[in-house]
Amino acid sequence: MTDATALPGQPRGGVLSGPATPRAVNVLAPNASPMTLDGTNTWIVSEPGSDLAVVIDPGPLDDVHLQAVIATAEKAGKRIALTLLTHGHSDHAEGAGRFAELTRTPVRALDPALRLGDEGLAAGEVVTTGGLELRVVPTPGHTGDSLSFHLPADRAVLTGDTVLGRGTTLVAHPDGRLGDYLDSLRRLRSLTVDDGVQMVLPGHGPVLDDAQGAIEFYLAHRAHRLAQVETAVENGYSAPAAVVARVYADVDRSLWPAAELSVRAQLEYLEDHGLI
Image 1: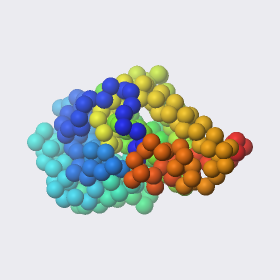
Image 2: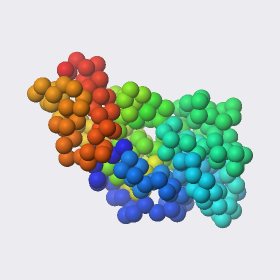
Image 3: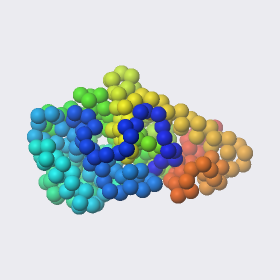
């Protein structure tokens, strides 16, 4: 999931369960790994004063974690009324079915296969549960079904795996496409310029207080990696595994399989644009 250890954006130190904004509370799942960083951030989002809450990404199928999410909401006087998914990867969505059973809530997602209930999610839609305003932002690229959620009242955006709190994310080829991902990053950047978004609430890693700085870093990083891949191909490294060994030599080898997915996406992008 990540091929770097740090990025600008003023990360808030360690990743802890607890309030991040007046409307968003994180419950950290116990599934830390090189691919998931400190674990999956399960977000409980609600309007102050409302007794209803929305949960974004219940996380893995772990009953202790799912019960902790419910208990955190109940301690704050909230009843979970809706579950949303940023995308279908198991570290975000595997627990959604069980969570729906425990909370008796529908699950809404872009991918119909992930939904439990009649409603999906569409670009530009506004979720208004309990008076909350949560805007659906399509951000494909990491996966084809990736979404982000703009929380305008807190000047924040919940990004799933599109922007992480530490390091950079992979483009999960073939479902993920680099061109889509770059467009998604530009779409998120426009939220920071035109809509006043200041904070990233990521699917993994710490909260970022400089959303624009983080997204600009992501765009620069992608341009740099793409140039490295293009140069590697020009120097005769055409197989994806060979490109990974050349370009990602500074990355932990345990992440090379994930890096190869991103390399395949980059090679496809370069081919589609006639650059190799």
